[in-house]
Amino acid sequence: MYASSIITPILLALFISIILAQPISWLEKKKIPNGWAVTMVLTGSFLLFFGMGEIIGKSVAQFSQDAPQYADKLSNLSTSFFDTLHGLGFDLSLNNMENTVNPGKVMGYGAIFLGEIGSLMGN
Image (cartoon, rainbow, N blue to C red; front, top):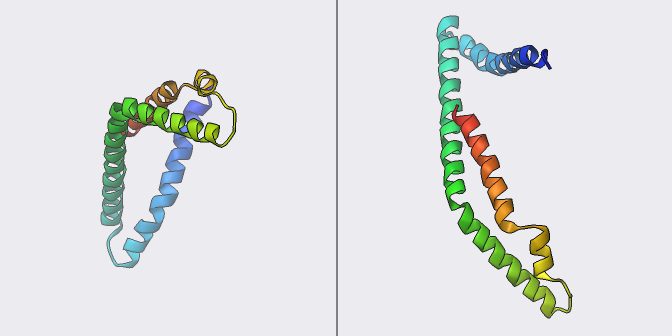
């Protein structure tokens, strides 16, 4: 447990350095000095990372706000689905299924999960 707090950042730094080494090497082959190549690649990667975090964070926030509407749509869809199955001769009870899996709770858990992912990406 203690080793993970040391090893995880080291492995992450190694992974990022391996990924960023190729663009730096490519820029150096184009006769751009090493310092400028590193600066350009680091700036570009930071902009890309934080830009993606911002986009994902906004999308997750919007999804979290719309989660109750999605839960209602999911409930209506499941009602329609079970009505169709009942019309085809399958004897399934929607109430038993809703007691087993509550669509509102599923959407709530999904919204919480995506909210945490968004806050992680935003930080």
